[in-house]
Image 1 (cartoon, one colour):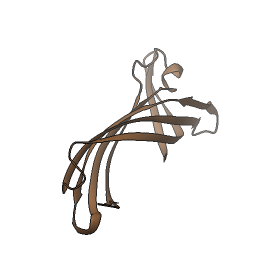
Image 2 (cartoon, rainbow, N blue to C red):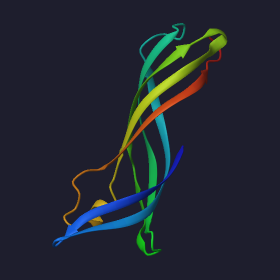
Image 3 (cartoon, one colour):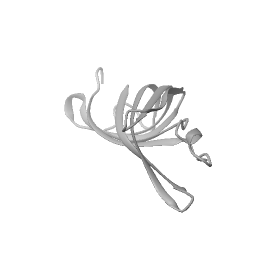
Length: 133
């Protein structure tokens, strides 16, 4: 599960003028991943690949309080690569790099519409504990 809140600035050209629109956006996500390890559980170095999908909800308001759009929902695709580096007693460190691609609700409000989907990149480092090794 994830939660993300960001200030977003949309910049555009209107005639000869450059305009900026400041937005406040919020993204809620619940995504389930499947992991494929490339070494067995006894290995101290375990690289993996994961893929998953779930649910993403995005809402945005102009900084002035006017609503840009209430909310949109999409089914994203998340792909990640990572590695577990194990120490003794089943404890270790996990590093993961992931990209989540989802629908782009901002695009429809641009003229011309943006051609890309939203891409969210994450680098994560954490502690991992294996049970029953």
